Image 1 (spheres, rainbow, N blue to C red):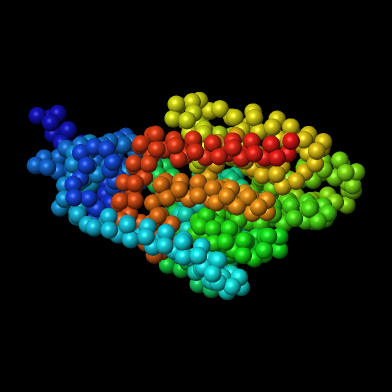
Image 2 (tube, helix red, strand yellow):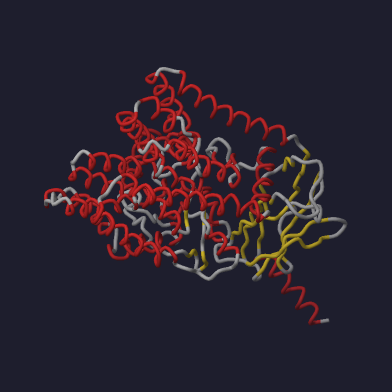
Length: 560
């Protein structure tokens, strides 16, 4: 009897100090199909669990006359977990669903999840109709309107889309890098105020723009600069791609516009350079009206249009015999994305081959390199920051696991559970050296530049959709219009199949992007794409790799 009383008292004490809170998104769940699946394609509901004083694991349960287990998960030191659970007929039904989380004798509040059948199919079909109709309308107008009128229209379009859209995960890093700068904290990973995984892993100049943007945004909106710790979403341990939840002010569209302004301007700089070379009509149709350029330059929020504009300026200046400016623009491009730096050895070797090299040509490199190094040195360890940059861009792992993304044949290795193979480190450097030798012997031109970029695509384990923007201006210059179309369609198909389109809507407008019924259908689309392996491999690996190889063969033959 005494032992029983002790057990009861201990249980009561444990329950008095432990606490679990449960919530979910979306709520209600507007399911787009008439029946919940028993298995196979399924949407995953997101559950948020706060806890203190619990055991090592927690269990999510559903009620059906009694409580039954759905899944268990471990606790972490932050006391918060974001977990995703497939919505299937195993535990869910249309109407009210009761759920809770338990850990030993400690239990959470009972959550009522309302699952409602809704017309998501019609909504999603309408969404795609609007998107595709807009694409074809813009392409048609690029041929029908006078060039100046079309450029003005596209200027309005790009600028109007940018504040209210963004790839949420990438936008978080555009924001946080500037906040860290303003708070005097290194954004490059050598700080104890945020996890290493939330570092800025690109060259250092963009965070300076981000800081200026946030300072102006703060001045206009009277918003204070957040502390670096406040930008650490506690669910990052269990859901890395939800880090955007840490900062979603109502005035986010203004900040998004400011952050994207360099990318927007770079799109139009590229257009004006191309229009001088190939004419306004071709530049408008194949660049400004290009849906991939609109996606990356206005909607996504990535640096690729910026580095591409500098690379294009660099190449054009080199063609004009202005090697000094070519080096300057290549160095500036590499200050945002590394790849334009690969043009610099080509310029040096080609001028040596022509016996036209002078030290004056490379002088513009020094202030740009010095500025980059100064930013790294000012915010902590120069060597550590450079190591992070090289490691993050060159080593094919994430958290020690082989990592692949985008449109690359290396998905096949990944799906075969291959150990980390640093193919890029083994193959790319000797291939680049061979290409440099070719330039020294035969000269540098547009075909060599394109060959280099496609070679990167063949060897790198990350070939993200936005990378294809690098190639489009150079295909246009080479008068390879079909190639510019192919290299635009490939990443667009991948994006449509691998992304929920609602994910690109600003969270200040649609915080829970799973809320629309059409978004649930988008998630079911993703499940099909990633789980039907023949489809996934065809779209992500086989088709793009085939075009990469065909491009390289065509370029090689044209140079022989």
